[in-house]
Length: 142
Figure 1 (cartoon, rainbow, N blue to C red):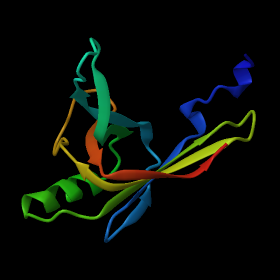
Figure 2: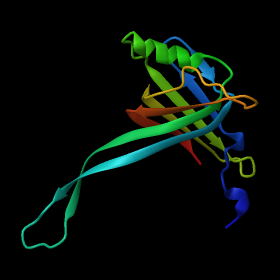
Figure 3: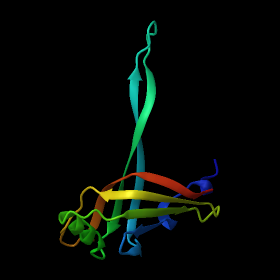
Figure 4: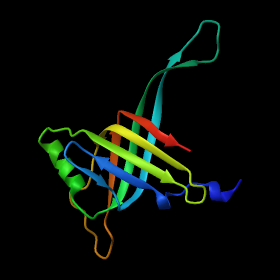
């Protein structure tokens, strides 16, 4: 294994797009998208083992960033009035050693929770935003 081929987050980027703003999240620390497959058990006669049948999947993830603005609080406030903004996240992983890039577009994003206010003395404040999503599409994968 060539260790130079291993991706790291140093050169990663993340963009947020809603129905009224589009911004690069320059203070991004982590971005994770996780897929959970949902299966139904199938019991077959004269068979001792269970079989599985795919019936769906769920997407969830977490975005962690340094607090430098209020764009996410503004999104959370929209939820309090019954609005559900149309949110898309675009994440880009880049390996500076190999020049390889992986870019993914995540659509139908809803933020499940977030800190409206968070303070700690002598500490750089981070926002952790768990989210769910409807779908994703690879823009490029190298």
